[in-house]
Length: 417
Image (tube, rainbow, N blue to C red):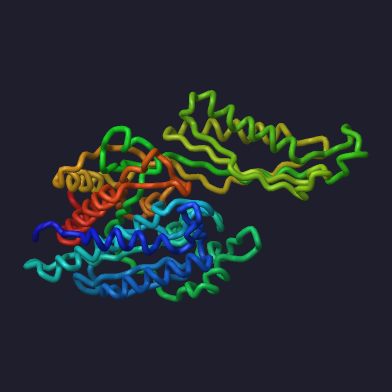
């Protein structure tokens, strides 16, 4: 094995600045929804970058992008690294995009190392941009990685629609990323670098988070159906206001969390009301609910009580439809890869700590298919999904260094024992 790969830190900083221009907002953040023109421009930029550094770029049916570096021959196993380029409507510059850029810079460093190495690599390497991780435009989230992992049918993914009725398939075609390539197989492992999106690394004074696993997450769409009526002459006893049961459920969601002292995380982040007029009783209301917990039993109890409460609100002209859209069990990442990340951090004198991810990431569905792991770098103030999202350049560089070292070990030596 040759000396550790040396990432180009100036290139990392420059690429972060460049990709942040696509969908930039006046508040310093991003609005780069999946398969939007802004996402298309960022994808074009990534495609040019990968090709310029010797990668063969493939785009599969659902728009997942793979930049392949043939280091060990066409039949060698493949090590994957990446994240996503899509953002929330008013998201930050680093969520997802950092993981793609860090993977690219790390992969370029490993490829340069391979050219001067006296021992041939055992594995090939690919930089990945997964489609629709955020789920801000199309549901479900982590859509592209779920397709790759065999957990979601490609046709169903392409049929997903946004609020305007546009399908993912049509949106990808419009930006030129309705791919026809077969996704590369023979995957050996997947690594993802990401900002923490929480406060723990910063509070503990650590640079690298070694992610051991993920919290469980359940999400619902609940549609309450009533009857439109004039808010003036319609007597109160004759109103069938769909917003009332929706409001009761919003409050109940918070009560369930408060009962656990905050151990159960819950939220209602979106409400759609029809006709959404000030002088019309709501005919329908749709709420988007989520619960997160590290303990499967706590999550299951909350979901059972929530569904019971929803059923109890039906009647007297009000109908409810409860759809569970995400059911992600608590899980663990590959322990061998976690140790590898920890060792690479230690070899560079970087303080690390073990933790779980509360947010969902592409590594979560991929972990059901192949050995996967994540590393975190600190988020200033724990802020994410916000235009004020920030991570110090030296922390971004440290994460890319650790990622490059881990990728080099995997490319030359395979999975550790």
